[in-house]
Image (cartoon, rainbow, N blue to C red; front, side, top):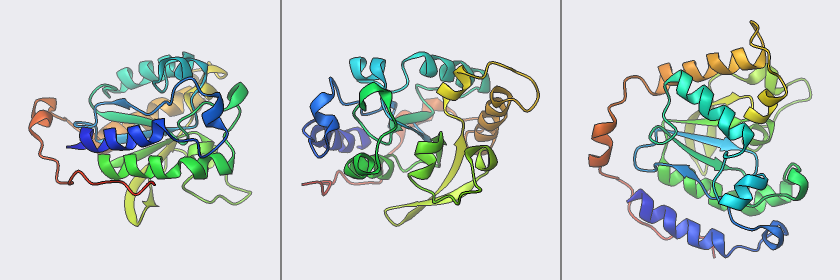
Length: 219
């Protein structure tokens, strides 16, 4: 089952000291959501202070705001999505994780995606986007957000879309037409309509996971 596979990955992640972040963390921040029913993987940047304290992603002010937008769009955080970050440990002072730190954590990130096998991946913010897509100097998140694309993870293609990181919306409170918050509403509606139309959650518990419980190569 997916949960069993993820527990193997989590146990390895809890022991990981591949980068300096392992020395300063209180908890690894592995994931949130129901892996058995999730159809979409949301990828954020890195844990913050509250995430480090609780071991769950997106539980601070940005996470609370994300919850509001998800509920408005009719997307269930508990059933429809599985939330992870590019790195599992909090960078000091909530700085952006370095390329080396992301590289050290990439095996865990890729394993989670492989096990969930989502219908789509949502890249929350520039750090998540740049972890999968090379951008030229003229490209910004404002220009690529809301557009469906294909990304490749360990040789498998996934449908993906970029949205603003919820922390950016905390600094942009306007709901005017074309504002970041209004665009977030549009993007989540797009995700709901395209990937999650009329999901019957009562059937999710009977889903047979096709993937065998396999040992993840992370020695």
